[in-house]
Image (cartoon, one colour):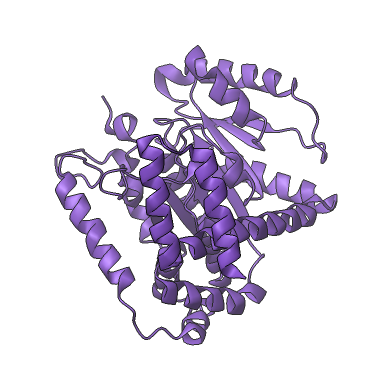
Amino acid sequence: MECATKRNTPLNCPLNSTDSYSMSDPHREKARYEAVERIRAKVVDIQPSALADRIIAGDKTALAQAITLAESTNSAHQTAMKEIIRRCLPHTGKSIRIGITGVPGVGKSTFIEAFGLHVVAQNHTVAVLAIDPTSPFSHGSILGDKTRMEHLSVHPSAFIRPSPSSLNPGGVARHTREGIMLCEAAGFDVVIVETVGVGQGEIAVHGMTDFFLLLMLAGAGDQLQGIKRGIMELCDGMLITKCDGENTNASQRAKAEYISALHLFPPRESNWMPRVETISALQVQGMDKAWNMIEEHAQWMKSRGHFESHRKSQDVLWMHESVRNEVFARMLGSESMKREIALWEQRVSEGTASPFDAAEILVASAMSETH
């Protein structure tokens, strides 16, 4: 079996027991996670204005530091992050934001490696926010193979940041929106958000990107039909991957089938009809078709006024999500609320209180505490 088919490995990299995504040593993964958390929890002398200036100047190290602050649960880090976002906000909004999803094994990492190299060759700068699924045990990334984009990761015009999803639904990290803004402020004009691709809540990444790209395999099987339909209704474009060798004919048939299927969905407000193409990331074929599809969509949306209105609606959605996150954070930040939550957790586990009643009482208590 080809290594790229086995784990989406770019450029025929051999697999061995030392591969970074191996789950054979959960203790090492847990230790790494705990070390990162100790660093995040340590309150350091953060100067938001200086860090924001470095980001705007294109400093990748400062960009990575800011994203780490955004992911931190430390209150001092969150306060600093809010100030950094305020300072960076005037320098955002000038990129094409691309969301990429697909079923496991479709070759997302391999595609992003080849596609990213093609885009930077067109004199663009590319930032990749790769979201890994989170282990419920170690709380670290399960796959960890996002860093295997070895050629793109060292390109001077590219930036790759893998982040655990932290068990958030939809496979999107909680602060992915902030990451997009920071990457734009750093000067990246193409920002790619890769989801876990578990078939749940892809509307999350659809609500923060301009172009939603779905990667599909030929002959994936009827067991995926439910996943396909839900995501197909959201996608702006579809790529049939691994169109090479013996799979070429099957990929071409799948392309025709998906084109027909997409015509059955209700028309969109913008009247954009999602495009379908075949590619082979392993052989670096079709990257130009993928990029042309995205550029054509951006031009279509901008010429009809939908691009800007879509962005504005996304900002409003971001506000509502921020309200929910802020309320939840304040609840957990109160010592009295922590004790009350622990009390109701015990009552629910003992069966003396229903989860619904406990939630209602806790929310009412939190609201009264804020007044």
